[in-house]
Length: 261
Image (cartoon, rainbow, N blue to C red; front, side, top):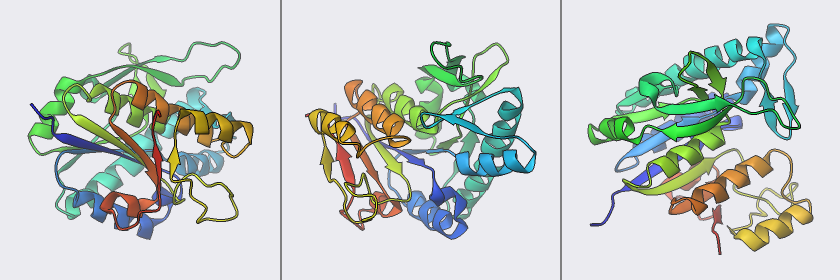
């Protein structure tokens, strides 16, 4: 039996911080046919709020270090302010969205990242996706909207990279659906030259990826994003794309497709 296609879309970067861009994207997302899941980050807003509260954000290898105070801030920003604003806007466009953290209905179970070389604090690494409860929502035409907060089922909330959540949710749902993962951010795709916004690399496979790393074209914050792309493809996700908001409505063919071969 052919599986139904499930679109998982992750937004972050300047899309979230720009109200007009966000509203335009959410209108397009609401018009996507079939089951869909939205995952959002919000690191820039969390940095703004942290700074306003006198906290100095610390980033290592593109990932946020989360101390106890930062857990409180990111929970307020991700699961509260951003998640509910996004959910409300989707409702205004006729998309019956439900804003969720990983703790809600035990949707995303994680553990505090084990300290090896770097202590990321209360950063969570995903252990399991509750595909059954997520599927109940999808089958009842509810669109889950996940923020970047997970939990360990011992009462501790954890800050988890939103790209990782999108990747793991895609993997977790791939037994039930033909899953397609879309990373939406402010650029048109992975660029060969950062100064040229149209220098999109249209296709990246495993060997090309290694070459781009060695050449320094893929670095910093793009590294964990690409790692999540290949992790998803290696574990059952059918298709992965990276691009700007025009990508989801196929109004622009300028984006990056990630593949294993």
